[in-house]
Image 1 (cartoon, helix red, strand yellow):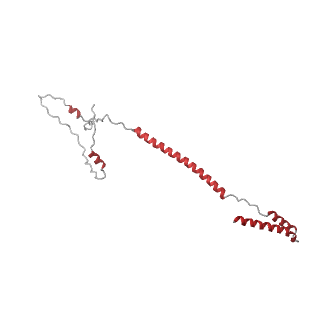
Image 2: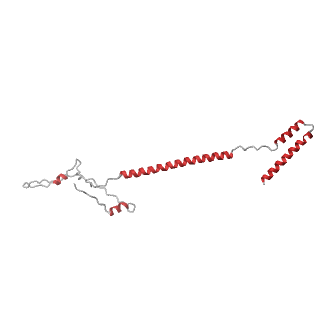
Image 3: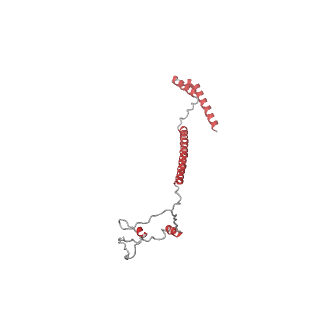
Length: 180
């Protein structure tokens, strides 16, 4: 077998790449040819007919068109590297899966952190304030009980009222000194 090669000139490549610069010319439509009967050369009676190989190649199909010659491609073509392209795509997919996994982990961590911060804020903001014990509660209760028992003579409760007033004064002084 013969090895054939195809050469592409740089001029052809330039013409193909410069589609936008030049307007394409419309190709001229060819008129369909009507097949004609091939003329047989008239031979003289004295001459012998010599078989011609060109007659074998000019055989026509049923429609009258000549059969095209067989096309031979070069045998030494480099095989198309589909595996390299496939491996490149698989590596990109693998990298994408790794990135997605990292993003999911990061999202889970952020969700946990936000949930914890929300709980902390909720506890701080909506916590029922601790009730401070009312100062001088014992003295206040004793004074009120005395007033209830001695409605007609409230002067009997004067010592208890004095104790209650003294206690209130002490508490006010403590608040003022701790506030400064």
